Image (cartoon, rainbow, N blue to C red; front, top):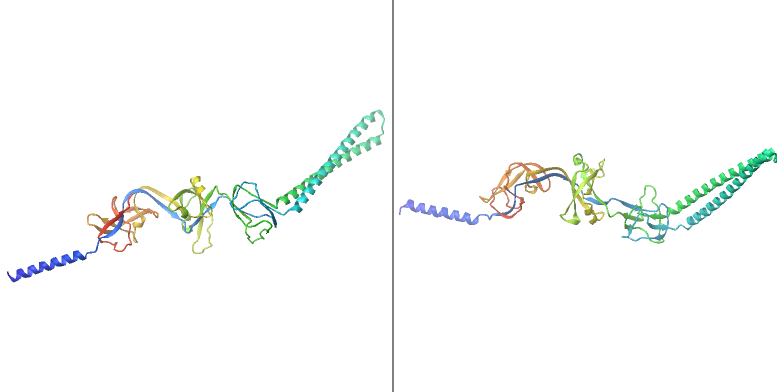
Length: 384
């Protein structure tokens, strides 16, 4: 065997060894999750910058308009009350006595007015009789004048007595109003959420400019809405009546259909670096609100634009610079592509250019080894 043939055989053995070594040491294909490029609905949405809240359509933090000692407490926390029900009453025996006095004075005034008006009627009849006798000359002119004057005087006394009765009735109304101010009544049907007071305790109204705890917190639990802060830069794109979706931490991934009912006409500047506009949304299905509690944290997603039949991919598949990784099944490799994106939200993005329907994009980007040119295998498929 010639020397050249020997060298050639050794070279073949060396190449085979290198190829075998490379094969043995090659990295295992990285497991990736992919999603097919498909056609469907894509929306452009915006969401609140901080957590919103579920609020009751009617909520009243009630306190008596007078200070005093609680004499009656007709409720406890959790009780359901109807409009007009008595919630509590302050000690008011003095005002009750004043009202009884006013009632008695009113009755006395009415009796006095009745007597005065009867006398006036009698005087009028007497004046009429004497006027008829004047024709026969049985009475003098002076007597007739006296009778007419007496009739007019008695009529004036009747009117004065009636006026005094109205004064007494007005005084009674004042006494009744003062007594009613010691009673706290429900302004609407609802549930007693909180009571800050007990029997025999004293309550005082809030001084001007100083807020104190309300005695009773009453909540209407049949009607709720969501109020959420939206960044000021998005305010111009919102309109009342837009479709929205509400998500609540207490309900997991469940979404509630809603509609924007109010957009505040001013910007909240409490936080100088994050000025917001408050937006309110009502539940499209009123039955959804029956499961809620006032104070739940809530997120609001407002739909600004919809596009049906758009070519779409999961938004999480898009990397920085508008790039995606496409899985080539034939070669088992990941290939980077530049895409042009249209409208998008947190879930889907519209693809205007760079991908075709049925292409498969990687949605596990950021995982170690998931890079352009890497060998890959599908760990799980997320499609339609």
